[in-house]
Image 1 (spheres, one colour):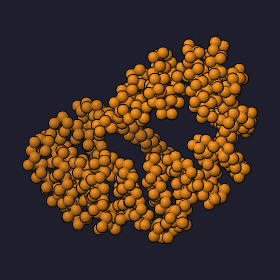
Image 2: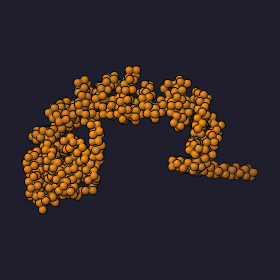
Image 3: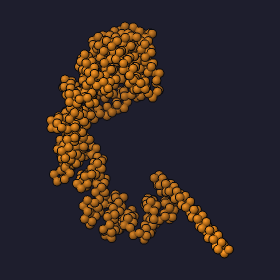
Image 4: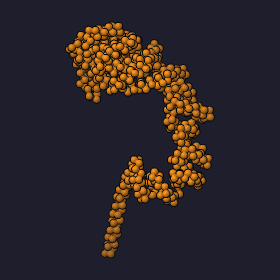
Length: 619
């Protein structure tokens, strides 16, 4: 019986203990969450400048957990702001009594400095360094205290003292570099990073990102490039330093200086040292691609040529061939580009690059040389040689365009419909095919059929699958037909004829037809587009004063036209590009912003005005 009673008592004691333990466990997360919430409130108050209320919360938190560094820092910063120096010194001394940590001695010095007792402050800081001379963190604590009080030069001396005492020349690199950047001493900051790079080449990307921060301006970029150049001779990391230089030059658009570095880097490249053919020409191709995208074609060509001449086994050989062809094409050197693209085809087999080269041959014949027969042959060759190529639909479109320009409307329609039949309605090219068919019907003056075709696109307006560019074009063409078909169909037919002549590049017939519309139907709705087209054609033929007159007539006679922003911008472009009258160009661009503030050109025009201001200042 006594045994049973003892067992019951033991069991009750265990249950009571377990219950108490469970309650304690339940309270701990609650207490922790409560402290975290209070800390967030205090931090928000501190950010808003309400240091008194923040301090009240920080104090309560600190009293509960004096060892929490966040609570201590909150108390310290708030008291410094409120100039409660005496009480703060007591709190810091309490921390020193607990841990005798160098950071608290550094804080004492900071308090004295804020009390305008700089002599005492420096005495404390010197004493701290002497007391904890072999502790690396000491130098950081003291230097940080000095930086907080804007004593940058003194902080630099502390870090340098730490290097000497610890005999660690590579220590405090990033700390010192940060101070030099704050002092705008970018040369010394760069020297610190370079010293670190010598023994830590794997940190190149990080170091480069730091240097990027202060080499965005042209002057600072050249200053740092000079530091890099002077360091090359003694450096073990010549390749990486030249890479830094090359990247800096690219950032400030100095492609000639960058190319010099890339040519040297190609020979120093770690991959080249291993004689890995796959990487030969990699550095130069990287540069050439950058230059090509920036429209710096002569530099791109130079780099591509070096690859072709010096690295015949490079994996970048075919890319260099293609890049050289594109560069020639962009400069309007059509015959040279054709030869280069053909060489790409001959050497690249059935690759995607060969397919694109074949397509670009067609583009040169169609867009630049306007040799429709050779363009058609080039596009058909693409379809025959590469039946599953990625340019399939664009080739169909171009074959339609070539036949359309030649006046072969039934053949053009066949190509457009063939393309459309292969496309799903949700494909973004489907609306392009539909619009081309609609435009063909418009040129043939079959306006009712054109409207039916256009409605196939317009019915999808607001749908995520619609191609927005062609939806806008469809809307404009539909308005043009509807506004003129019943009231001014003869004017509309003449306008369709003018567009046919324009497609054939028969600009004399185009101009005459447009002028006929102006003479016979001056009040027709189509006149707005007639004046816009007339201005563009006159400009293209070099008749700049006549072009400006056409655009100005549109602005004056049709002040509510939706095309006026375009006309005003074209006037500005003629003054800038063709007549080199920057003052009139500036005034014309300003009118776009003033008179048409909601136009789609607003941002481009603002940028253009800034550019013109710079050019005028330089002149």
